[in-house]
Length: 498
Image (cartoon, rainbow, N blue to C red; front, side, top):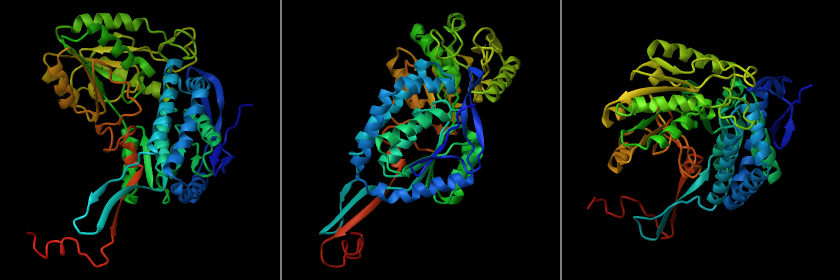
């Protein structure tokens, strides 16, 4: 009999009102059932939002440094349980243990960063244009925040959203990706142990309908969503109609550009990690490789040889480089794009389901490389979210920059070159939220803003200092101690602009 897990609402672990559950299985060993999680409905979301709403006034009045101290304790507990959580994340998500350890470490870093930011929620004090009057701003809590997170970073992304929201004095209702409910379950257990007050953090498991119930709830003041651009558009319309604050982090079609003078050994390591790490299931994954014509053939020969050596399997086992895709739908989608690629370009590696010991019971696809990909083609412009690399040849830097910028996404880019002038041109001209020089398209750090332009996002950023602006509102305060009525823009100029 599989274990049944519960929601966390108002400080209590509770069963779903419907009594219904969904399965969570190991994508590397699909016959292995991890457990059953609540298929939550409107009633469960209503209860969670009500608990968060009731807890909000007291939590918002709690001094921000004290809120930060709880998150520092969370960071300590995550550190103590790092290996346990990483193993659980690999079991339900599939990426190799080295990567899930990094995922947990990012959560630890985010906790400690958030703890410090509890002492740094700066406002501004500025001169008033009137005598004996004080003018200032401060950061004010918003209310209940709904957090909807994806499968690919089962610990890091929930912490990116939750910890800044909490430090800013908000309460939260979180729905993790239905493919990875266990990792967030462990995170919430740690928050409970760290002393988070009842109702401040609420966990509601479920599928798409559960997320929709959170988005549409009238008592949820802000939504943060990471996922597909199509779903983000639906959420954007709903939040626009109800005037909710919204942060979207969506798709990517990221390019690594290798110039003729680039360090080819370094670029080779970068593209192998960027394209096939996390089985290509990152919004920052290297989906396109742009190679200067003069080094194209040599680089492809070396890349194919290296990629052939990647070992597929269950990520907790030694020596495994690439795990499975998350589920059957994901594999079907990647296979569809491989068929599209066969009609648009030339396949030089992979192109099918992986078979053999250790992979027959999971959703494994061979690392796949296409060359002679044409700019503007589907393979060159559409997000695949799998271990498929599209290689495009170019002649000069301006052409590479133009190819990079032609897609509807704008998350990450990278350029390998020894030319410092070209490096700065790339940082200026590549239409992305993130550009790396001599590094792959993946590798964001917790203390810097994360996000993109165009259809990758809606202007807000996760991580770093900017996310604290999303989870708080600026309030302007004036104190007039003149003892008389003063009319700004009138009395100070005597009715004249001069």
